[in-house]
Image (cartoon, rainbow over all chains, first blue to last red; front, side, top):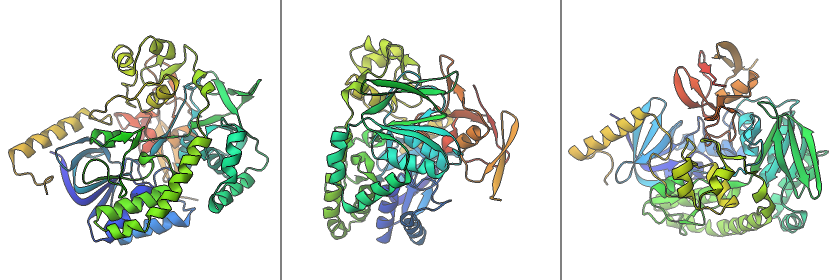
Length: 432
Length: 82
């Protein structure tokens, strides 16, 4: 029988948006909890901050969370809905049902990966992926690292590795200089300062625009990376390739709940409410916008969920400014069409089921390919190959079905037993 | 000396700083392969944040645990399949 909990406001995701949302809702006196898949609060950008604080901002929010008695449910993997206003999650100790009056989705983003020869070798990782491991105890001292892909994250990641003693061989940015320059020149003062300090931290490290990795080679692990820039192709031996092509919103849970999406982003109104009443969404799932925008959207969602609409309105202007910046960023770092030709026919696109591009090309759609090749049907449920195939072949994502996260059979059985007991007795959890 | 925890990876004791994830401990212990794919390729972590499942290992007899999302605990037994 699953454990049952009930909150006025349930926040899913413990990154900047989720933390800000929880604090603002709790300030109104509501009973608030943050359910998070990660072992600790902070999401990706503030991963490890609770152990080794490096920003005042996280310390501020972390203190507020404790002062406001926001409950934190770490290692909580939501995988299904159980009737109205109840979600089901798996934890290390079993299954729990989480009831709520208002739900705030702050499920963040993941990196976009583009398949290329050798990308399945150990030590080829995401840029944010290797950074997450470095923040979780991995020692990168004296390791040779190539940072590649696209987006402002590359500079932040490279600077972080360098600070931890890694040798950064180069940063390869696929976007052309002529698109980055006008973007850089229009940076708001705070962002310009940040960019310049990252550049200073990376003094001596080549930052090559219009450059990307073509392939990775090695015997059972990465040994060297082949890069291309214009007509030039060359190879470099290295220990890690940290490669990510910007970010993709995590919208699976929102989709499961029936929230409408526009172009892969969760549709929200001025108050961050989705198309489903009582369900709000903040941060990267509504469109990739970075830390500051995530915090503001989180604040608005938290206040709105608590019914404090006046408090939300004074944040609208700031949010609009940050959204305009996010739109400019998206244009500047748009993926160049040449990258569609990175995977070779034999390159595996689906890493869970080891399906190559040539096998996928035999089918007209992702649905057909799924049925006949199992592409996207492994444990990641298409979270890695889906965004890649959208870019490479123009295939649109399919519908989302529960469980939205791979769980133990015991968890499915416990969830089913809980649902059955609910229909046979007055429901203590869900209805309000 | 920062606080640390000891766990076993493929039966070999490894000591890592407190707060390290199992994935970080496996890499610190010198392994880069975590598992074998369905066509028997050696694989290691890709996303580092619980999405890709490439870093899955067996922990205390439980299969398919994402090592990047699990903190090391004293006495934990981790088994790689690579």
